[in-house]
Length: 185
Image (cartoon, rainbow, N blue to C red; front, side):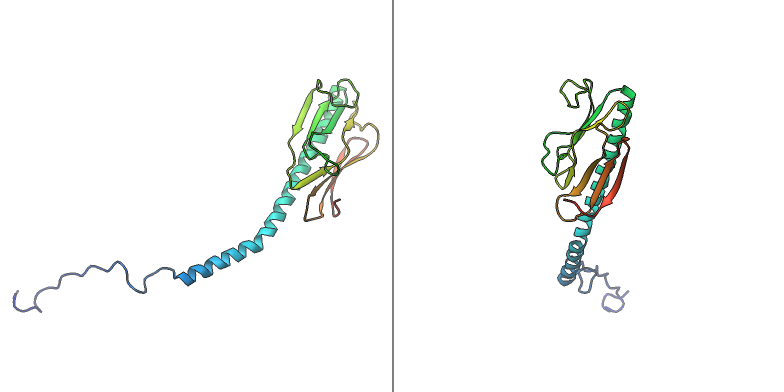
C-alpha cells in the first residue's frame, strides 16, 4: 500500500452517532394526544365501573343475608331453640343493619339478644355506600318458622345514585326469596 496515495489507504470505520434526527421515539405532541385519549376514556368508563362495583356489592350482601337466614332457620330446628337475626349496633332509621347483623341463639326464649346468649354468626357492616333495612329482630322459632307468623322483608339499596336494589322476603315458614326492586326508599 502506498502511504502517499490516500485512495489506496482504507478509511477508518466511523462509529454510529448515538442520536440522529428521524430516530424512533415520541414527540411531545404525540405523548399529549395519547394522554388526552387515555384520560377521556377513563372519564367515560369510571361511572360504569362504579355502578358495576355497587351491583356486585349488593349481590354479595344479598348472598350473605340469604346464607345467614338459612343458617338461622336450620340452627333453630337443630337446637330446638329460637334464633334471632338482629341488627348490630350502629343502625339508624331507614338503615337498621348499617352496623352489620348477628345471629343469636335465644336460650331463654325472650326474643331479646342478651349478652349471655350464644352468638352463632356475626357479619360486619355492609359499607357506607349501601343501606340494609328491615325489622329487627327477626325471630326464628324452634320449628324454623318465623315468630310471629308473618312475612318479613329486608331491603338492600345504594345510599345514592341508582334506585335499584334487592328485596329479601322471609316467608312465615322461614324460607327466604330475593327479588330485584326498582324503587328504594
